[in-house]
Image 1 (tube, rainbow, N blue to C red):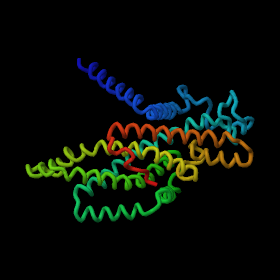
Image 2 (image 1 turned 30 degrees about the horizontal axis):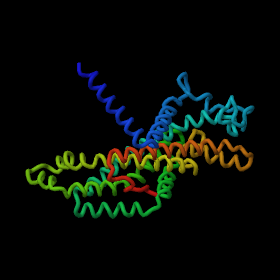
Image 3 (image 1 turned 90 degrees about the vertical axis):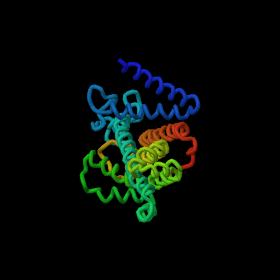
Image 4 (image 1 turned 60 degrees about the vertical axis):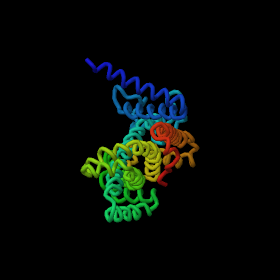
Length: 309
């Protein structure tokens, strides 16, 4: 009997949040629209009756090689006669899957490392932080390239390619996140209610679950919104360099690389313009949305944290 009021109340809260976002952060509202469009493209990109792609992104057409944008091919075709718009729509799968997966898994890894290190403290914290220092001493993009390159020969399918990229970026971003999460944990542990909980006999697990984790949840969510555009950028950079996703699979970074090579010789400007535009819009949308959510969830962290590069 209470299901409808509960669902209605949740919808009203969501609608109020969206209106507030659009009123106080118009760019964040624009970013939300871009993210929603990306999710729709990734969801309905599969070949079939519900696909929104106008053509099969894998179908070669010798008679349509390097056609400029027209009514039959809105974004033109590539060197193999494949419709560029269809391949860009399918490429959204990689961006969404890698972006959300890496962000989620990196937050979990950062919480495990940074949360345990800051909460336990002592020699354990010292050893863990020296290990993190050594890991972060390597340039970020170089570290991601090495991690993907180590497993380059394991599997050449789309699934294994995406899995390798997710694994490499999770390790790269997770250790960076752990440093920020550790600082958030330490800032909570200095409060008097933590000492009071210990005096009355609360276990360490209960203290962390009820008093520490709940107080760092908002900064963790903020951190996720900060890291998402960096994940999209890094995945595109890896694909541009030919790592991770198989070349036959649609990927915005790989399409940008191939388009830049062909544009230099055949003046096919559309092959580099539209993939670069999609990457730029994805980074802009997630960045603006993250900036607005960051101000709403935790105004104290506005522009307090930067990127990992």
